[in-house]
Image 1: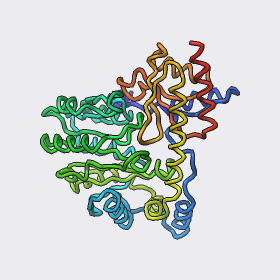
Image 2: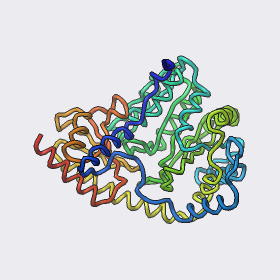
Image 3: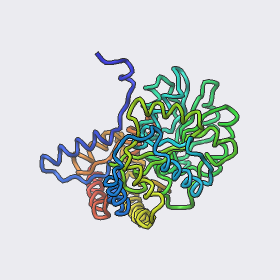
Image 4: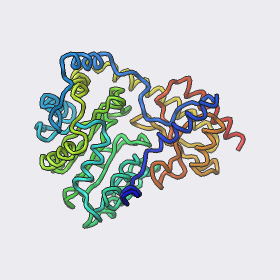
Length: 386
């Protein structure tokens, strides 16, 4: 009945775990939600007011498939100020959320048998999109012993004549790991030498706790071969607004825009205008949010490390922890299920993020300190009985 390609399409397991958690809540069980990667803050007032004004100003009609010209110009200004890279509006494409910036360039660039190297453990939509397009997904192991970075020698070994694209993500989901400038320099050298396109997922660029964010797109020869991806979802607590944006070579932007036209026409007009206010308006709420996340990060890391069988690195970015749970003697999925059903804490198995996620769980600390402490107490009690 269904097309064969549907069998190659993966999923984002957080939605499935959320459904299980909601079913338990419907039965009267209290659940602490640490499974979902969504800021537990409201969108700042100035952004909401900008959207409301845009609606009343009549910005509710069709627009260009790549995004409104004024908005693309604002994003060029943002990238120049924030990343030090000069783009033109014909290199910018806006999308309803960040996922299309993963999926559509892969559809535009990857033919059957082309190889794409991607992070593992990593955001599951990377592998799903590669497989759906008919490409060959080549996992690159992000290793705990390297602070959830990868070994450059391993990357070099995985590059073949069939390698068309490399996907990188920093700060990273699910580990919170951050690539160092030296990693990016070697990525740039290998990409230029082997004519590889880089899709750089930087949606957590503003949620970083030590140092500053660096992008591979700023390195010599890389602006011409990088799709620089960002979105408003995490930084501005705008997950439900669905607004992503990317900078890329003009030729890729043209194909990307054609896919936009065929699939969803364009990102919502008044949301685009609110997105400009997010970039240009006060950033106080973002700074405040990151400070709160840092406090929560320290609490959950310290709490997990106090539980027998758990070992947790302190992430440098994003709002996730990825503790090693091999000391409990349980597989990741079994422990995740027991943590949900017996302790009332929703989290994700490390295997939701690829085969190299076995031996880990992922917790989002986008929840209150009180709920995080409650979850830690419950998990500690459960593990003490194993």
